Length: 120
Image 1: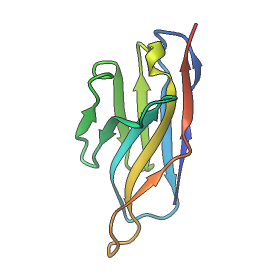
Image 2: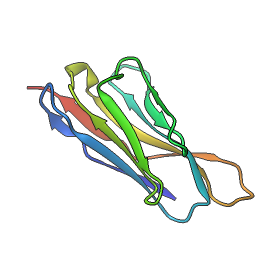
Image 3: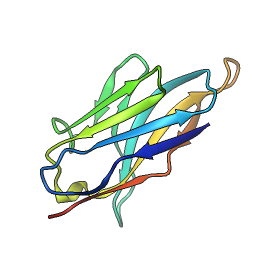
């Protein structure tokens, strides 16, 4: 199973890009899917997460600006970002808790990361 992230790039302040991350391969279930970010010199932080039933979590720094969603049929999670600020500049990584078989425990999988640079 692999997670592949799309989106990102250079965005102007106030921009609204959308990130997506798809899990490929055979899975039994995907529980929580989320987006983390890591800026240079900073620790990795959880930005937003969503459960398979649709419950969501947002970091205070992005509440009201970012929206996380998922398409369970496509094993894909999205992060719609808006009102971007220069301090949102970071590598964004997707994460998923995946159970490969009904008998196996959940494991964390990570995407390759996509750089979002907010600059004019």
